[in-house]
Structure formats: C-alpha cells, structure tokens
Length: 126
Image (cartoon, rainbow, N blue to C red):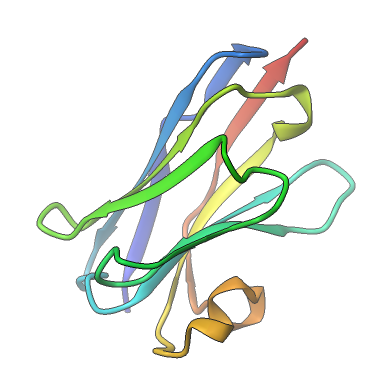
C-alpha cells in the first residue's frame, strides 16, 4: 500500500499562489491516477483535480478550472497542485489520494480512491 504525505499548505492572502506537494512512499504511485480533494469546515470532502498515471490526462472541478494545475513527477514519486489566484473560498484541508482504476470515469469520484494522505491546511484570508 502506498503512503501519501501532503505539504505546502499555509496561511496566505487572497490573490497569491501556493504549490502543494504529495509525496508517496512504500509503493510507487506512477501506476495509479492521483487526485486532490479538499474539505472545508462543515462541508463534505470534494474533488479538486486528478491526473492520470502518465500525466497526459487531467481533470478539474469547475470551481478551480483555470486557476489550479495538477502535475506529477514520477521520478520523484510526487504529485503537485499549483494553486493560483487563491480565493477565501479555497480555504480547506487539502488531501491527496491514489486511485488504482484505469478507467478515467472513476478519477473524479471520491469512493474510488483507496489511499489517502493526512491533509494540509490552506487558509486564504480576504
């Protein structure tokens, strides 16, 4: 089983950028799709972005499309989430997770993700 550790969160002002990292250990994530999710206080965890194992295919929630970019470096066993033009509504705990399915239909669906990190807090002040 793969272990995932997120990093890069913090407290920032609206309009700035942050880059989150998701480092894998225990097993390579290069053969799985990887996703980012977030959970704001009092809300359910929601899909943010996902990327295929090759990096050729990416998917985004409408709320972050055009502002966030997901990428991966399989040589470093790491997936990134570049977040630009952050808004207060982006405030949440951000989680990365791996998805063993080869069917891209499942890459936006939370229940198909099997390994999760502990999360990293992102707080955007107005």
